[in-house]
Image 1 (cartoon, rainbow, N blue to C red):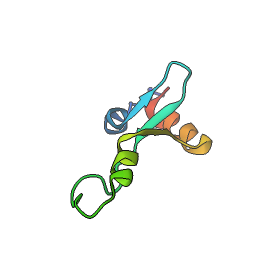
Image 2: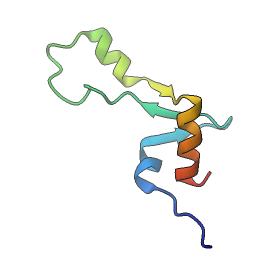
Image 3: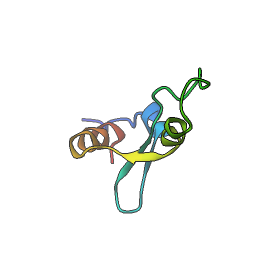
Image 4: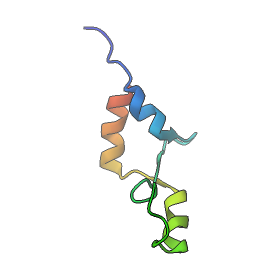
Length: 65
């Protein structure tokens, strides 16, 4: 059986830290129509967060890591 290919689209959207955590960006509602959103909501969208434990396990399978 051949090796599983790395999902390149997911690899571009996440970052794997040196400790092995998988970080993602808050992309929901951050792209456009920003005038009616509060400054606090826009600042939250800039920060990175970690995936939950179950999601991280599935991503590791997709990424082959």
